[in-house]
Length: 536
Image (tube, rainbow, N blue to C red; front, side, top):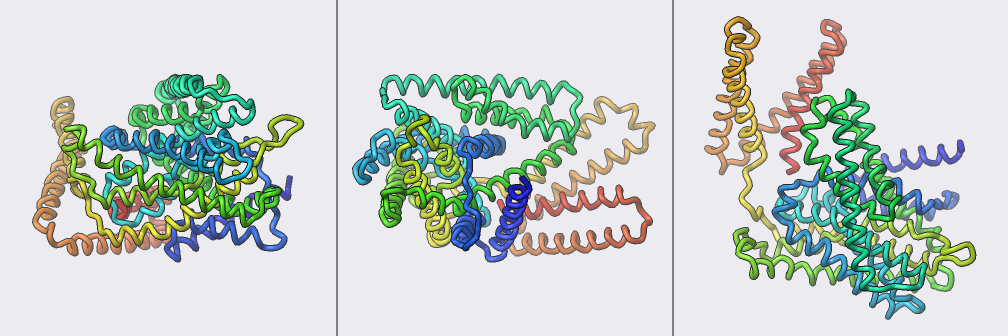
């Protein structure tokens, strides 16, 4: 037990160091962790990791799916639902179909059921890898919205394909008619269980006397309970987690009523998801020796050849599918023609951003080692190895070349979107006006007697004038972007000096540590407004 705990802690420390190194050399950490894990796995004396596939699937998948659903913009998702649906369902099924028949044709002894199993594993792109690579690059908001929405739904559709293919391999029987009916039953009941479970947790958050810590713990428990509840009845735990996450996210403003709760929850989830993603990406590399050792009759060269061929297939299928998805709906629907044309650049970026990652690895590792007590699962390690090669090729090759492609095509924003700082100012003006109206309507008598309330109203009126003046100045210098950049740099410098001054105040002990921490938190929020704007 002590040795295992030490190994886990050591692995976490190594992962954190590698992530910091990746940030220093400006490589997206998923790419760097896969390469580092692969290198570490060949160091003599490094223990070979053997992970329980059921545990890996249960631990990692529910929170990753729930977090993706939580941060999905429902407005953007609904706006681009046609493109998202054609990618998340159409492309997943097409990729699974092509991979199934191709793998049966090129791999000796590979059955069609095993082909669909492999297709279900490698068909969904990874949102974490794509968004991490694209984070500091200039891409249209539409691109990110479609990629995030696709990743949310394609995880569910690919895992349902995987589930039916796994059953076909184990039982040796498969009926397309029966599978189609079961697909809608399993998915639909999964959604129903997710919504019911989300309502229960909604009631707990809303009506019971929870604390910020309890709220954070409950949100971590929610995806696991939703997943296990649906799986207990042999329905889709993935659809339960996704639907429940979307519902809870949509109602989050009702159930998390205090800023402390929201800030605490965001911190907990950011830490949890970052650690899980980082661990899974390095595990992709560390698992390789164990996978290679179990290839059996298939040589390493043959395994690499099969993996490269399947990688090429999934890349080509995605690129061939993405252009019809982008343009055919515009020819058939007047509503679709109202949006600006995506041209050829935006589909190219979306097509090339199809990097595989966390979900593919977790799904592949969930394949049982034994079909029953007597026989091993056929070609399990070959499927794992091909999955590794597909993840490696798409993540490293496409991930490293994607920034170059984006710079070469030089794509601008496709849809008219107000800059973030203008939207923030507009939101603040509306909130301040609401506060003033509320004071005047309900607390008019208190305003006459309570100088604090009167000062608060005056500060609101001052803030409105300041925000309006800011918007006017932005409009006057829209062609002078250097002014805005200089403005942000100066503010960040002032915030840094203010933070040092707060440290000086702490040493002087003139003010309480609690009040100084509050001032530091406000500085953090002010700085976040600028740094978040720079990353949008």
